[in-house]
Length: 278
Figure (cartoon, rainbow, N blue to C red):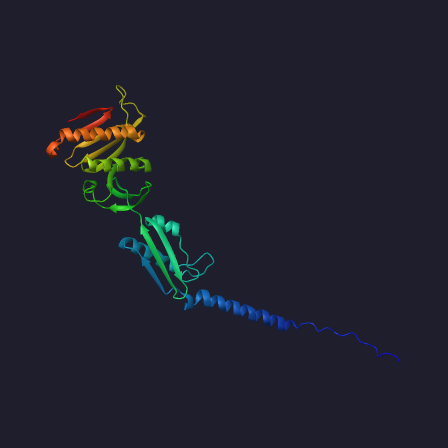
């Protein structure tokens, strides 16, 4: 018998219109989902909570958050969204004078919580009638007050008050030095109200009018009653010399300031181990 001929089976090509519909449906779902997540109110930030005890910092932080929520990301997505909200923590920490700033997002409640810790001032720098907070790393991080320098004293504030004619003199090493002096002064005991550090020309005999003279860094401390203590320049390089000068202050106080006598104008320690006073 002769077998029946087999005709080749025709393979059906997918319909182009059907593939187009699938693509359009996929794009529709993608766009709708993106809109729902990023642009609708369904995932908009519901509330912002700020944890911190400083009213001024809290208000400043709240203002920054409001401004940020009203803007857009680099991808033109709204910042007022629980998924896209991002802060510049490092910049805000520096601008607001904080030692730490943490942000926690709750995606279920659509809330964002900020917790901050303010920097603790090590000193108050008074320059050009402006009082500025200085931290332990000698970084200026905020304005202390609008008071005149005469109103800023250690008696009134829990920090070291100082004056400087050049803010660059206020270094971490310098803050450590005046911290040691202040701590020792309390044990003598004397009450230091203000430190002053400044660069002054090193005037030599017959050369006082010459320009570009080398400079000396002078450190003074004013105590209650108005007496000024002039420290020798070696306090900045030699801890042993600082100890000697502190010892000389202690000897002077015990011998000359008996009974709280404070009518001396100055105590000068700039000449080695010798003490000059008036």
